[in-house]
Image (cartoon, rainbow, N blue to C red):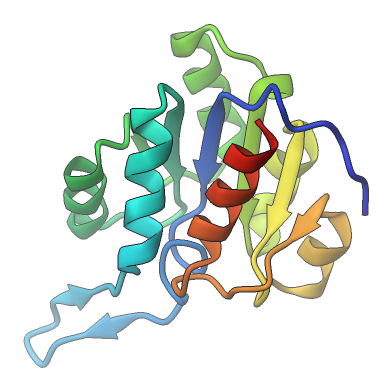
Length: 160
């Protein structure tokens, strides 16, 4: 695990399922997909954005619930149904004028590895799979969907 300098992080990118949620998929009897988000994560995200920083979600799955939660919190970038997360991050970097050296990414599973490796700071949630934890610069003490994002934001803001 590396310990790079994180003071220049201006963009925080997140996977959704397993990071903003606990990774479990919930379906109602009518087949409606449900997701559970952590309020503490939400407060951290709002603080990050109010401090003038950028935030994005890049997810392999697609759900209108994610768009709704992102809008509630003021998350500027939402890319869903993505098979190449690095390509989506490149679109965000182009739009913002920011670079990988100014970006942290939080992930939990194999589709997150390439983007974690490219960003200045790759972070794994505590319940990430082993290859993600091994690649990560940092591993949270809290699990995805249960305060891991808030932990990351608090750490980044304290270091900046």
